Amino acid sequence: MIESFKLKLLLVALALFAFGVAYTHMPDEKTEAAVTNLGYFNFSYSTVTQRATWEIRLTINDTFTQTYAFTGIGPAGTQLTATSAALNCGALPVNTFTNTPINCTQSFPPGGNLLILTLSSPFPQQCTAQNVVIGGYIYQQTTPGFVGVLTVVPGSSASDVGGVQVLNNVPANASLCPTPVPNTPTPTATPVIVVPVIPQIIQNPAIGGIFNGPRSNTPTPVRPREVGTAGSTGVGLDPGAVVLRPPSTGDAGILRVRRLNISAW
View: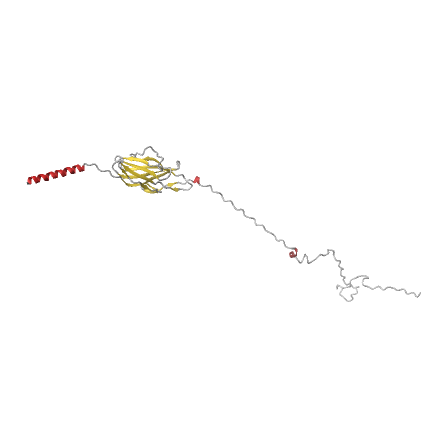
């Protein structure tokens, strides 16, 4: 009886051991790869091509082949020009980044866990410097039998350069600035002095004007004064004294007596 019980225990133990060995040799179930880090890197600008170059970097936690569909949101005209070594995105450059998805495939390993996409975007120079936005984009992961969700990554006005976030700067082009128009000097108006017309009556009423009336310019003869002498009728007067005499008018003012001749005959 006891021996039979021991035999049953031994058989149960052997069965459990066999199950454990078989379970450990079962293949791992594939799961969705997780993006543990992403960002924009190494912005640079060429004044010759008028385009900026920058990178999208994704760190993936994965152990098997994944397919990624990238669709650009902006800027318009962006091209995919290069990718990391093991990321197969077809013929490059791809000019439809902002129109249709770009499908890229990478295996883990030997591709590692870092995906790098190098892109080029047009940014024409202006008179003044610009701070431009690169991105955003949408990506979606797929594996056999699994389709991941769409992930939207917004654009950024800065990118990582040597571990430091630096603004995406497009330098100014002074030749595009409008030529300043020189200031036209405003002519200075010369003041016009208006001399008021003064009526003659106001100019000098004492000398000439309507109150003086016409006058003759014929000189009036003046009788010279007589100086008293010793034989003058001014007896006893100072010889140097002035003697006043009535004006000599001749016969003027003297009554004439008419003579009447009376004849008896």
